[in-house]
Length: 107
Image (cartoon, rainbow, N blue to C red; front, side, top):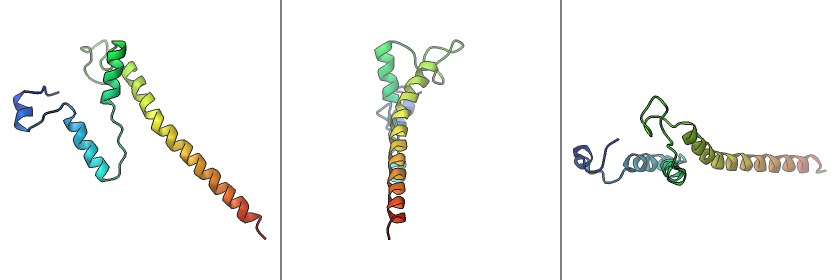
């Protein structure tokens, strides 16, 4: 990860550690793709608990892929919109069933 102030970030006029996420989010939104950013929730959980969200026994702390605590945070954040989608789909299915039943009983 680039550190702000190094030559690579300065040459590219990068002034935020969220630069890559910001670019991907803008691109996704122009194409109607929903975005769920996980950096802030992971950081907040790490600050709250003092636990590392990345890294394993065979790596330096907080390096590499999410560990079990990081995956737990990610799962909680993913569950919220997915449950909302599932609830909306159930509502749509119930409305369609109700419409079909109404149509079937019309003379």
